[in-house]
Length: 433
Length: 190
Ligand code: SF4
Ligand code: SF4
Ligand code: SF4
Ligand code: SF4
Image 1 (cartoon, protein in one colour):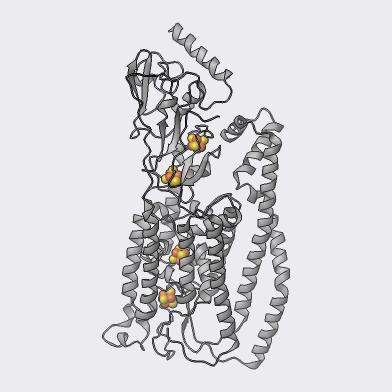
Image 2 (tube, chains in turn blue, red; image 1 turned 60 degrees about the vertical axis):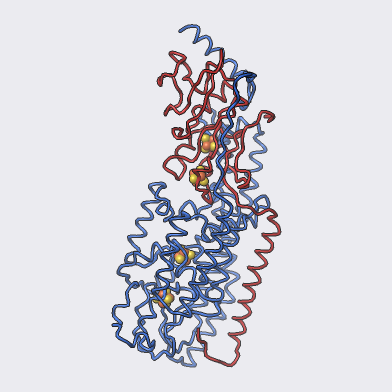
């Protein structure tokens, strides 16, 4: 095989000589007379019509969920709608795009003018928020496929102590803040990377995410909807907006007689008992506490910003350019170090080192500024939580907390004042359907 | 939905104000984004073939069991070489279609004789796993007419492509769904 070997060597030489590697006419394409060149096939993406169909289905489902939860007060109806949405948005559309992830697209579009936000992402981001401004979290009740897959496995929910529920609930804001920071700086879409259920919808995906999803579903049998209550970044937004909602889920259709029958009916711990009237002395001390908290808030925000900004170096490593620059710098310092695919690829581009370092530094600065904002935001959330806990709210009836109620409709079956419950239905069994 | 009639108080005012502010904010945000976005068409993921270094991640990082990325061939760029460095092992024992001589681990490239001394190479996409071995070979010593592309009949259009997050050369980018491919062209300077 010597002639072949010589030929191979020749090619090797040729390859080395021609420095830039791509699409070079080393061998002029032949001019065939008889043979016609085949076409390169370009299968088209799914039709743009799906964008319209998805938006219409979302709008219709939100309207139906709001109607069923507030006007019809029908848990059965909500459950059927929820199954439909699980099948449609989850298994049929394979969980992409969803409002939770759309938060990142919106954040990226706000800070990167080079990114044109697809209108369908904006629709998915905004519609559920608008609805929750009027009707409470009807999106979570029956439309969200991630909520639905957790809702169908709720088996024997235990009640989570109030302090734990509120404490863990803060995690969602951390997740939201981090997701916005990394999306806005073009580092990563962490909500998509760590979506626990999308691999179920697609019936494929990385094994780690499958395990994570399975664990959440297992936990979800006993701690109802753990992702929704403690992690979901979009849920955190909906929680805030839900507090402002025009109408809300009311457990009783008429008047609360404070029978306490509904007290434990909510698997998500959203039902707040009626309160007794407050003594004037306590009221006064509450006012003082509120004043102190309000005065402390700016300090808290600055402190939070400072603390989190200490993390800007590790944060910035989420960005590919920063990682690349660090790798290249290490290789420059230690020539024996093995190069990576990324640094090899960088060297073929011929970009000067300084320009890469400058880009990475600019990114790190930007992420550093973002980290200040993130810290301030988290401190603000913490402060608002403290204020909310400090402020006394009078409740003359058992109420679903606007922020935490997911509009699932389970509690409707427990109120003895509802004429539908006064007929034969045994109220102990107001189960899932 | 029933809301008992109460005299208007401070809390209601605050509530209504915040509500209005929220609506206005959402509306303003949407308006600004739509106005700034211009053509806000849906996007899909695609590989810039001039950036791709055929690292092999495309075969393994896709969320699909069998990657949505496949090798495609720009026939107009191909030299129709007998000794195709995208098709053959670096030191093939024989210039024939024996599996042991081929670069492609799944034998997805078909070699057909056209006329002396030209051979045509076509990709059987059902077999291709998008590993980019042939792309590397073709880029190194050939015309670079073999390259990787996201095939949109298979791709799920993830909001963030898992391969894009793992791509060492940042070759992935969002392209408008109406122009979903970045094919190598004969007249590309680069
Ligand atoms: S909290 Fe999040 S995951 Fe749960 S239903 Fe609402 S949007 Fe969906
Ligand atoms: S509708 Fe009732 S049971 Fe369901 S989340 Fe709201 S308060 Fe809880
Ligand atoms: S991950 Fe990037 S560099 Fe590697 S084969 Fe895919 S497109 Fe090419
Ligand atoms: S967008 Fe998703 S399906 Fe398409 S190539 Fe990337 S990971 Fe694979």
